[in-house]
Length: 416
Image (cartoon, rainbow, N blue to C red; front, side):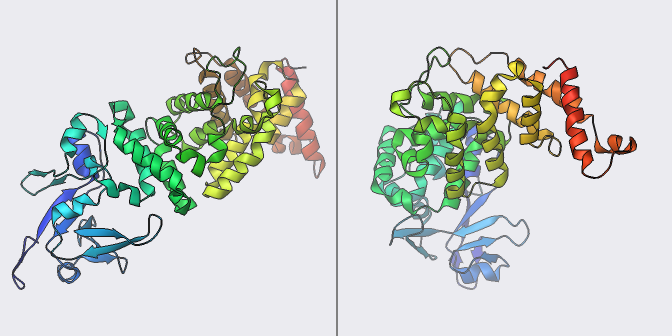
């Protein structure tokens, strides 16, 4: 589609965005996005492209199904990240299209001959490991606060930093009220992507630094400045501890459920009465409604919510695992529905391991409670209703007999 002979227009296609950025970084990428300059929707349809949506100038390639977007400009016409008027036509230049992008590292195009078009210094910013906004139009889209934080989480391990002037704009957006226009679903989409990165804690650290966390996740933001007993928490600040726990969880598991549960396990400490500080007795219970509230507001998937609630409720108990009586262990196993979802125990124990290691000086600490509870669970799981039925037990009595047999098995493991 280099030339449209009927109209005499010269159409040019460029690789843009993430593929160009990650290729320059030597970073793996899986999707390619293209921008088409000099074409109209009619031209695209005539070439067999399939339009995505009615009003958005994006088309799917007839063979590769990759996205080809017409070069376009945006003009702020309302509030929020959807309040824009788009203009896409053959007279929009590549430079105009790149100007509307959020960060300079995302505003680089690559021509068919390999030449880079970089009007805003993105290549240099990649070399300097800098996340910098393209223009002051950055403040027109509140979603960009989350996007910058997500890119920071994705590339923090490569040494990327946020440009000071970009951080200032993020702070302006955070206090403007514009973040309130973001849909809960979109906030979660960006957050979920950040949770899958190598450095998810960087996402929340940056949101806290620019003031966005208080607007979007006040339950989490409330943890900063809240002290904990120095004996158990040399880092003292609960917000600092939370990010350390998330760092450890990211090392232990790639599962978003484990990482999210680790992030929110201590929300109850944010509502501890001031006169009780630095103690947080009962925070495993006061945190439960806060997790429910956060998950409902952001439309967090059930798998994340369920694990987060269990980790919050039981992490203090698990830390004392080797002190527990058989009956208490059995109640715990019942509470997490070990019998139907045995894999859930490992996820909970990973979160608790991260909780211990997410403290200054504890990052290499052993967590024998995990192996101990796994051993008890393995023994208890060997019992089955079928075995009891073979002994002639039937009806409602099976459930009671099974519980008693599990309790006796735990006692045989040395528990009182």
